[in-house]
Image: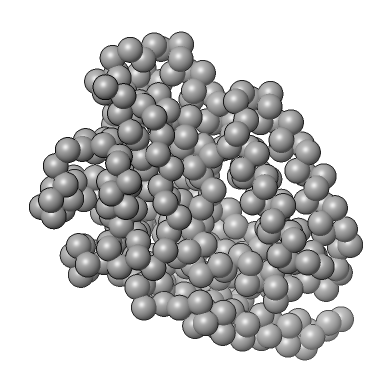
Amino acid sequence: MTRIVSYPHLAHYGVAFRPIAAMLGDVLSPPPMTRRTLELGAANSPEAACLPFKLTLGNFIESLEAGADLLLQAGGGCRLGYYGEVQEQILRDIGYHDFELLSITTANAGSLRALARTFKRTNRRLTYRAMTRAVALADRKLQLLDGTLDAARRLHAHALDHDGFERVVQAFARDLDAAEDTTAAEQVAARYDGLLREAAPQMIPDVLRVGVVGEFYVAVEPFVNHGLDRTLAQFGAEVHRPVTLKAVLDLDFGGAEHMRRLLDDAAPFLRFEVGTDGTKAVAHANRFQRAGFDGVVHLRPFGCIPEVNVLPAMQRLSRERAFPILSLSLDTQASDVGVRTRVEAFCDMLRLRRAAQPGG
């Protein structure tokens, strides 16, 4: 019997997840995140669990309601490494029994052969050749997705019609998702590179440059960060966000040398690895300060231990380098209005600060 496969919703990254999930069965795209998703997850999670835990659990409940019987989860470097086991037990405790949850980690999917062994336990008909083609397509789509969206975040502040610009971005994600091979995917990316530049035809000279750093999930998922990228663009700020799925995978498979480079960039404010995305947050913020950016927004889920651990380093960087850093802690009580108000005030402050500088 063909399995019905689903996975947590995460911004536009379903484009890259789908070829992987399709190796195991028919793909059921997770429903878009809504307030109901959050409420379902929060109602069935431990109170102290972080926001990504609650939302991914809510995703799983909605996918099971829609008929999924195989759920994919990815492990991580903090409590995320235990998400799969804990969430599976919660789902069974609340009455879902006819499903399998497969956690994909560097331990069972750190190489193509390891991934093949893991997946063949679920789909014995999967061939190594078919798997390598699917992984290659997913990897190429991920590269094109992150590269094009990175350019879009920088261009958005220059768009005269923000809604029209976002429609181009949404159309790009849909067309890239529909591409059946790497050649078609590259053609989609090339076409939309031109369309995005047409949607922002005139580069506005006085836009702010703002970096966005912090925990991966809250940084990339607009439902969680309340549309931060769009809000910054509306207030005239180019968004530079090095937090992407490709960057996470590069770190996971980059080894100790990659971490040493991050710690070099984080010095003198952080000397030791703190886990998950905390080290990267300080390293990226320090890079942005040295590059002359106007400021940084630091995003973290409420209670995220690695991101809380780096707050003193971020505060020291801000104080000693006179560099504005807006820290946003996001939980189930955060709202669009609250985030928008703080971001608007932050951008106003950045403009006043720039105007007060010599030559401003």
